Length: 532
Image 1 (spheres, rainbow, N blue to C red):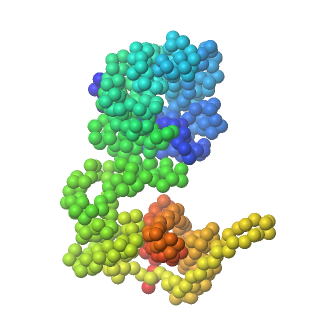
Image 2 (image 1 turned 180 degrees about the horizontal axis):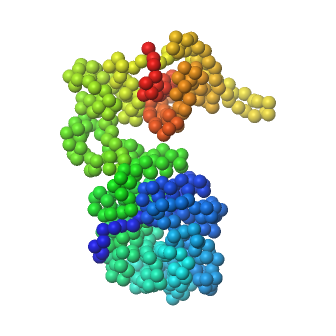
Image 3 (image 1 turned 60 degrees about the vertical axis):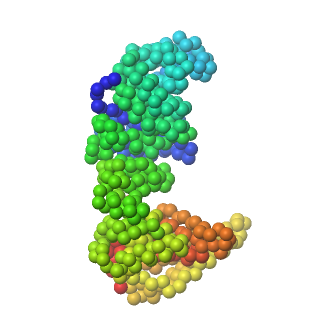
């Protein structure tokens, strides 16, 4: 086992991650993600498989400039019956624009004889000759030992011969792959320790899939046993159940196990940003409960928990959230006590005497509203407005006198059945009485457009405001179409800052308006707009 404390990180998001259902990277996506990984400090970025598809070809033809990371291309060892120098598939991976080539080969005797339909000896030659040839063309060659853990279990002698041959042929890294994700941590640790007797840990890596929900644990077990490269993807993207999640592996290695990586302590503070930036590019809602980087990773809901965290964060927080670029979040709900409310006040910059009777009034108001369907643990902006209203601290930026929403379903001139939504509002804004009409893609969109049409001339900062998420939940489904509904809206100011608001009513349009009103009011309050 090596005593070296440096672990190298290899990201395969752009290839393995692209195999996730619903994920389809464009060339520009690959470039943007590569730059984020480079800034983070990832050692190797696998850009894809040259020759496999036009997107990867375009990416490698004009790759992004990387200041810290090495760009790797992925491909296969030579085919049977061809020499390494005369295999078009292998040659496509040996590009002048990359600093490393990763070649995958079989190490499970069953896969060799059944999937490849070649002899065991021929497969060993394919591995050795491919790596030896690639070593003359690119600075570094990596060998991905596919199905290694299953292969070791079935025929350890053959699996070890394959990885030993790859190392002796000049592979900088021999990477042991848990291809079907079925290994367990104790198995991985034992096997990696065995391989370290043949391939030095300083040249040994691991690539785990998450089919048994052990990919992160297996990766850490491999490092503990001596491996010094870990492969994975951002947010655990990948086919089936995904790959090892580098977003969890990196802080575990650095903060828990004391290893060094290419990510500096200051770079580690960008981890939450990188995780969420990937989801934003994929137009996916971030996992609120993701370890380290999720919105709820350091959220405290129960009153006793919040009180304890205020006194000593280590009570319920395993690390300081700032280390990974996250933040502590005191959630307000019907389980809240005085400590939650006061902590939340400090977060939003409200100074108030803890003995002020208004604190007790707000606690009761929150509990009453949540009993009636409101949920403030997911609508922080609405809670802040509620709190400030109880404290008489929210200006009235506009007053809605009435609104009307009409949906019309009809056949158009092209004999197509369409539905049009139109909203009319009457409002008073800065002493002016206004009436505006707007159409939208549905009644809520029309209402939002009509409000913005009335308000933007007086509040230009609303021009960049947009709704990025809209959720409706039926609170009492037994009431049928007369059920109370809760609407949650997430808004964005156009500069990446987001907030959530909530509205509740038996009328979904009314609930939507309440959430819209809070969203606009929160934006104007935060920007210091004048009201009355």
